[in-house]
Image (tube, rainbow, N blue to C red):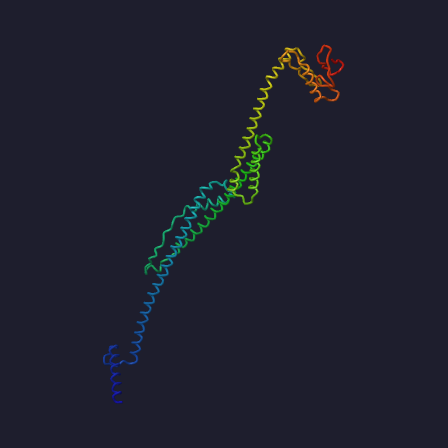
Length: 354
């Protein structure tokens, strides 16, 4: 027990000595007031250090946050610029295709596109932000300027895209309208040719082919889903059908002309022979009854005399096929009539019979 008390006394003396060393009082024993002061100083130091550490951590966090925001702003602008580039390329092609308001069905689509395209051509690429932000720049760093440019670029791109799409649609409507009008005109041409060529072709199969093309074109025009491509496709064989009919008409005209020339050439020698025979024989040149005439017969090739038997036989056959009531054409009405001088009786009666 005595040893234990002695050890406690030694331990207490050692602790007092340590506190004296900290307080600088040497061998003076610290009182309660000095102890509180020491605690306050220590606490203040700890708090200041903590604040400094916390502040540094806060600044670092802010710097990291703004760096990330800067990177995102640059990325957003890069995407916006890439999208603008695609739409600008589309607009460039559209501007080459649609060059006048007459090419579109709705004039407003053309004027709107022209205005948006004019704005787009003035746009220049913005400078990217520097995202290497220092601790001294962290409080002033901002992405607001680039964010505004990105928003405006996206807005311009959207307006340009819409105007380009609308003007292209309007041009397609106008193109389809123009194509339909051209097809209708060609259909009218085909129908007119089909009607005018009836009975005037050498080969009627050409008209059948033309009719088939007319049916195909009519069906294409009535198709509600008709396009410029489908209408142009149906027109491809049309001109060939038209040319076929025209060629067939020309072939018939040539054939008819050749036949007429051949008939005229064949009739000319016979007419000259008959005229010469009548002149040499002194036979009656013609007999007129009821406004018609019948030529006298040719001479017999052997004797040179008029072949009256043939003449009478021909005349009888002709009269029988051409007679009218109470009228005798040429030399016969109901029998063989002869004059007293041996020539045929041209008055049609039968009182002077041979």
